[in-house]
Amino acid sequence: MSSTAPELPAQRRAAAVRAFRALPAADRRDVLALARQGRRHPDERVVAVAWWYAAAVLQPRWWNRVPAGLLPLPGLVLLCAAFAVDAWPLAVLAVLLIAAGLNLVWQRLTTEPLLRLARPAEVADAPEVPGAPAGR
Image (tube, rainbow, N blue to C red; front, side):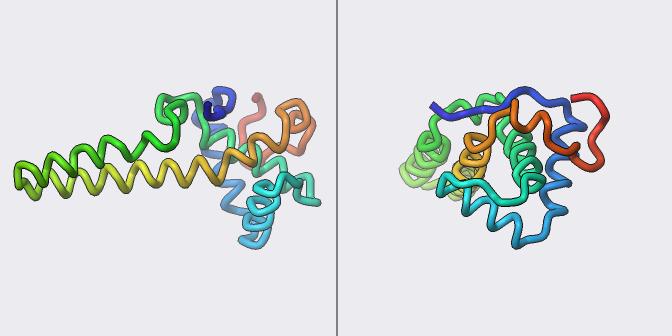
């Protein structure tokens, strides 16, 4: 079962994504690499920003609850149907569905380690995400 984050308001999600993108590229790469290894980044502010980013990306939506391997499956089925009936527009749509499914798989695989690394109780005391509204 995939992990999802607590529900966040739209402004909070946008602020978390902006704050993560505002981090230097080296910090973003380091925090993702360390999280995949099960280790924390030495800078707790970077850890907090990365956790809020993962929480913003992994909202409890249906596409985050479906097992990752099933996301490109509808596109593959549609691609087989397109070849069976020799319909190139259907094949183009199938390729787009496969690409979207693989993008969701990649996004989940890169952000789930961040969400598992820090518990919300630990992040609650972390510095506020820049640009975020005052309430959580």
